[in-house]
Image: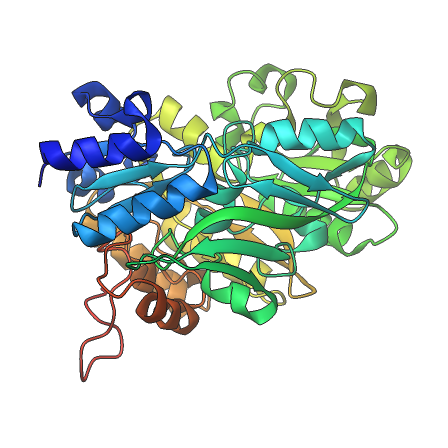
Length: 453
């Protein structure tokens, strides 16, 4: 579809001509995210783009755009900073991209929480909070660019998850959600109702405001513990993760040769060694070294707390930033998203390495999910064919390694979020199915999953 001239006039009347973007280059740029991490998604989404970009600066404008689009049957795909990896912000059916990056006000900050508009950048918010003696509890590796709304609607966990868990573990307190109806409703959602809107890709409501719990500022030192064997690195990281006397923000063992992809860091690392990328509270250097020595390791590169956030940090090489460094080194690589058994993970790691060798390279991020310490992972895969990729996924699942498929844009196929709650909200809030269509399918009669894989 294309935006008809009368629609252009109507939308410009809401947000102003300067915030209705119709140029080809603008539409191309703001219809993309990092879906190209996936060789499966890249050809599927390459040519998709919006017919127009709308950039509201107030909630009132969001509501008016949604009402206008509803009356004219225009699909609406919400966008933050476009740092997602699954095509969350890519419009499959044209229509409008609703760019919320201009809703960037910090509305309230207390000792316990911060209330912000969806377009606030996490990096700027973290800087502001630390200046006030506070800090974010969790954030993604893309936090310098990512928005709060984009993280809540498209992410799950990240740096800090070793202490505070993922988004579903009490890390969102409240959300303001707008429905897409003839007269959009402003919902204030909290408690169990939030399950429908975390990691929802904007498919069942548009989040314009979020309230997040915050923590006291901690002085974080960074260190790399190095080991001759990846298994020893994993045992050390597990022991550290269970040591509550050491406060942690990041515990990430990385198998060689992945550290060789980290160009700004590799000269500071031991060639051939597994590297554990760590952020711990300053003053724990001796305890950290003792834990590493118990598993045959040693502390190598270190950054003191007074240099935290000065230049590139260790978290810039973890979570899905690891994939980006790998792709920069070898464009044929891709990745998976995996969850290991909290008890059997060492056995599972051994089985994967025995089966796939260097075809599957591991880096783990230890998290505390629902109160239980466990390793999550974004393994690097040497991609050959889609068929082989799904053979690897099938083997992972056969040994109890859960896979959230990052090679699909469909929520119900990717295994993310709380599907039944999201579907119920979709029915209630989006009667015409105009919010980010194609990403969340309402099941047809007699089907439990709709058209998912």
